[in-house]
Image (cartoon, rainbow, N blue to C red; front, top):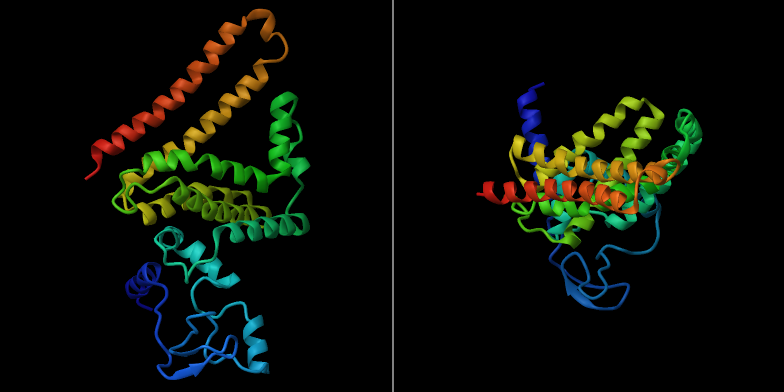
Amino acid sequence: MDLKQTYRRFREWQKAPVRFERKTSESHLCANCGESYEGDYCPVCGQKYDVGRADWAGVFQDFKLFRGVGATTVLSFLLHLLGRPGYMIGDYIDGRRQACSKPTTVLCFTAFFALLILNLFGKGSAAAVAEGGQGVMGAILGWMSSHLQWAVIIETALLVFPTWLLFRFAPRHTRHTIPDGIYIQLFMGSLVLLIIVLRGLISNWFVILVPIYYYIAYKQLFGYGVWGTLWRTILSIGIIFYFFGVVMFVSMRISGQFWAEHTAWEFISMFGAFLLLGAGLLYLGYWTGKKTAR
């Protein structure tokens, strides 16, 4: 087997997975709305020209999970999401949506799938993961462990702004908008949930795929080089963990002996310094990206 040729075909599939070809140029009368038209699909209601009475071939086709056309079925969508995540997201936000599934529907389905699979077949329990935590930190970690789906959704929602800011001047999808960013993170949330399923079913080591896939998706989507993608991805994810750490720190400090030793002004100053540091890191990344944009 020629590995170089196989990889070349894989790269071609990543960039152009679907080729649309007209199957007929004859005139048809739509069985659904009665419109007369030429081509494969009715321009009024969108029904295909060869839809007729129900038969066994149609039943088999409807229940077939993989048809090899686009990402409109379960298995083909998973293939696109795992094999070409950044290119698929780029197709969607550019308007090429016949080969993509709706990200909101996908995220809801993936969250339900993850909940079902992990409860039925996952190794260990969420309670066991959180066991040993105490106080506010233990409560937060326990909630995250037992509500992984919501934790992932919150994490991807928080990534919308850092990604929008740090990849603002990318070679591809330059100046992508906040709505674009929402769709990007909806797809990435689905991808993270799939990785969590693999982690629960096979091994905890699969969690390392999360930052790797973020890097792959951002590189395919925005078109930066290796280092340009790497530092922006690390900073965008790291800033989320930083602010999460600030919340954890504040949650622990507002109880116990803290107020006996500090004033409200000291607390506000400390919290404000943490926020300013995080905002400064984001601005530094934005400024660097703007200066290095070509």
